[in-house]
Structure formats: C-alpha cells, structure tokens
Image (cartoon, rainbow, N blue to C red; front, side, top):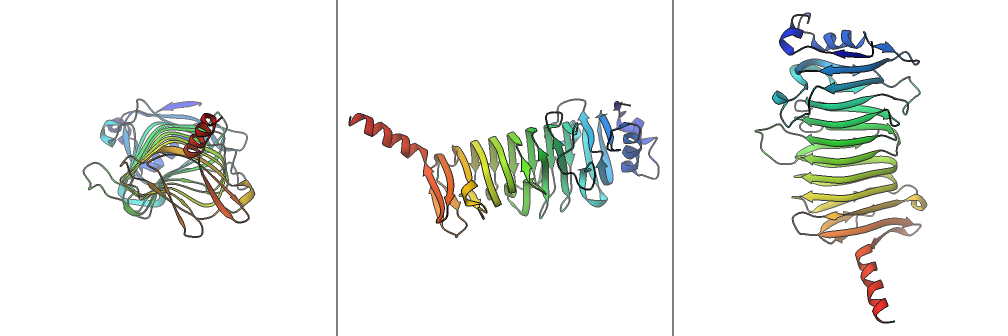
Length: 322
C-alpha cells in the first residue's frame, strides 16, 4: 500500500495488544510498500493524537502526516505523545536506508504533526534527501533538560513552520539546561533550508557541526540562551531575518575548522533592542548592533567580522565626497 489512514484513537485502541501502541504503528507501517533498499515507503495519515510507549523507528522513505494543521497543544493536533513508561532515546526516529547511507532518505516526510515528549527524552530525529523529502508544520514540545527537540540530517530539502519547545503549555518559561531545539547532524548536512522556525525555553537554539550551504530564514528564538552555535565547520551558512529574544547572545562560534572555507552571512535584530554577543573560538567577543547585517569569514590569523551596514555607510559617504 502507498497510503494508510489511521482511525481515531478510540477505534484504534481496540486493535492495540497489551498497550503496545508502538507495535500497533509498526504493524501499520509493515503494510506499506517496500522500496528498492528494502525499507518501507509510503504515507501514514494520522487523524488523532496517539500514545507511544517506545521509540517508533520510521521507515527510511515513509512520511507521517496529520489530517489537519498541527497546533501548539497535543489535544488539538494530530500526532504522538510519549507515555510515562516510555522506552528509548527518541519518540520518532527515521531509519537510514542502509548502514552506509546518510543522504538517501528519498520520500521521507513530516507534515502537520505534533510530538509531545517528556523530560529527558529526545523528540524527532528526521533524515531526508532531495525534493521528495520535507518537514512542514511540526510542533515538538516537552523534551526538557539535556535533550534535543529536532535533529535534522541529510541534504537538499526544506524544513518549514517548526516550533521546538523544551516545555509544554502551563510549565514555567525559562531556558532548560542542556536542551537543544534544533541540531543538524549527526554527519555532515548539505543544502538544508530552515524557514519560519522557533526555539523556545532551550539553552541552545540551532546547533550545527559540519554544515555546508545551509540557509536559516525567519528564525525566532525566545528564552534561548545561545540562539546559534557552530561546533566545527561553518561553510556557506546563510542566516536571514533572525530575531533572538530575551538573551544577550547571538552566535557562539566554537570552531572554524577550515578557515579558507569559513563563511557565515547573517542579518536580523536582537528583539530586546540590545546588541548581541558573538563569541569567537579564541574566547574573544564581538558586540553586534541590535539591528545587524554581518559577514563572518576567517583567514590564517583568525576570524574576521565585517559589519555590512558600516560598509554601506562608508560607501555613501565616499560618494558624497566625489
């Protein structure tokens, strides 16, 4: 089968054996067609919210789709929520096509889904490849301290309208220690576009290690201590219209491994109308203005930051002097 529609919770519950809701969804997934790699391929449509008691390992080419748009609360959305006795490291985790492949999850997808985790449990680990893969309207909440809301691996696909929050509605609003809203990995990621995303109540917003030609556009972080963190290699990172709120930090550049390929273009506004700190690999800091347009590059002597607004002002003055 190419597409399976899951009935409402009360109807589906009659088919669940010994409370194993994950087993129920594994049986549904096994009815989908197989791809050439031997993995399942197709779409599972959810019409309600359902519990999971252990990690649901999603087929490499499977799309999970809610019947209607995901909202900020699980009760009004289609999706999954972790039970108190949950077993596993992730609520949802997409399989690799094979042991050697990290960039071949053609057809994988998430659409209109809400995933509610619990404290200390990672949310969604998605892998995608090319234009047949996508993440569109995903809400992940409740993963708490020392956990990741959304992990994104693969290449050349878009991630749109995603909300990653370490807490659930009703919890106190503050940054949870060790929590990460979005992490790009676990291997090198290529040409992923993140658009209209939010990080909430996390210590880290978007974290990347080895990333090539990644675009982040219309990104809001709120009560997120470090909105942007690079741990290894920023190679062609384009960050447009970022809006950090309630933090003094903008970017923590821990490492620029290949200085001749280091390039970050970044513009936006610190929404508290104060400048934002950029921390360099040496520990030195640069104070970006509250509204900024910056280019970050490196040479053998270290990291260089160019303020493009100052460059344009210098050009305008030079033109007047002609």
